[in-house]
Image (tube, rainbow over all chains, first blue to last red; front, side):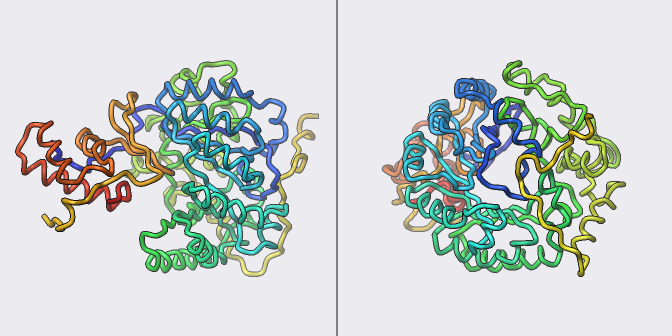
Length: 381
Length: 94
């Protein structure tokens, strides 16, 4: 019988295999590249209750969801996190926690372990305290390092996630050295994507192509040195790649995100696209939202694709790229992602990368993520 | 086909942090692990099910030869090939 012994597939068959629960947008940090909405503060009063989240978990499991990320905001801000992890674990999810590490006390780690949490993704922005603290707008560095050591001590597999931008890309080498010493087996260099807060700060955050290439070489040297001891994930940002990313593996293909207020979305950024109807699990069954709602059907599959995607031989590889980026840079979410070199709007991306490369620039301070930083009230008067 | 001399005595076991189980919604065995999931084909599922850290490679091959029809040599080679791949990918350790 064992013939095709490694015939493996990852085909969602229409099921939302990956579930992300943004259980809160509350967070003690003020990161200037945060992907939460600019009006994150308005969601606090509308967060789903513990029982409502449990219902979401049950319904998602019935739809075939398997991988589960608890994210935010900072998910540790919810005192019921452990209860939700235990519930999800009993339902058969593989439970992941995506955290800044702030609030990850010994007591909570013990409780999360007991609840069956499988994996922790911890963010760290720099190898020097002054840099981390300035970037996240809080005294966080030492607490993050403590969290990293404790996560390891409790035997959790850990992904160390470093969001990468101009201010810290030069620390790639030091970060890997530190992680190797701690015995971290997986490090992800996440070249930030430009939505919401990051988009507002894009000119200041975007690294130059030269910096990206240099970091890539550093990563390659470490891969050669460390071999199988550490997996180092590093992907060239799509602004420089010339090819669009296969965003979310396609709209409504395998990813399902639930916002703090219960709104079901194909990705965490989707609410930036105007004209789409966003509905909550408070009002509709999750099965309907996933399978039938106009939102999830809007860009699902390949039938909606515009030119030049329709006649492109890579359409089944990238599905036309990211809908949110298409909207943010071209004004129409139904356009080809302008990160694609074949997009008629590719110049918008080139403008941004040209700005990043300009040598003598007036440096603006970064906008910190904080309530009331941005208001659209003047438009409504 | 290269088979190392120690291969037969190995007692393969799922690596820590990997979760292996039957998933009704996929009608298949699956592997769940940090940042990923894999749907296993029936053969891979039957082999991994037997990798409990107690049985040797020789024992689990014999068990599969009893349980499934087909030439014993094919099963022997298929199992070894799969175990090599699964070990290389980090799913199993000896």
